[in-house]
Image (cartoon, rainbow, N blue to C red; front, side, top):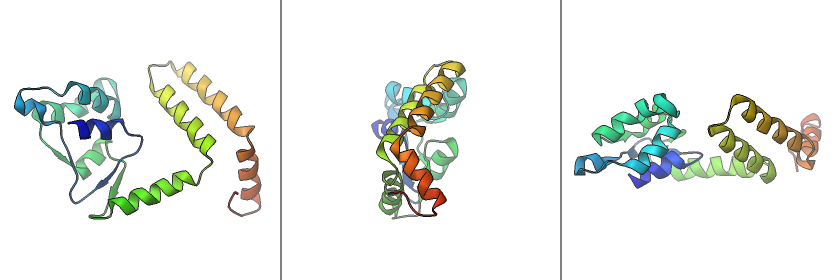
Length: 153
């Protein structure tokens, strides 16, 4: 259950399509997985819809395959059997190639806007982040590189 909670709490989940499974088996031992339930509901869309998606795992304790977890929204990228480390590495390299301040600010806005904010508050956060980003040296270099048809430095 703790592994499933960790996956549900992660920003990005890569799973081996051949061997990975996700489960909250506590119910079969007389223990409901309360803290994984919180993470699962949020990861699967939040509110009543997220609770309905999480119910099968939480009520039955039955493991779900990586492909089923992907269709639920718990897994973001399915790796061919035995290649999860390579796929995760490539994904991490792609993220790491972006300016750290831009990724960090984007993560902050995503995290804050996914909380119980009003639509207006979420857009206010996004506008503030867009202005910060547009005024950064990373944006200036990225724009120059785009028009010069070269990678940014």
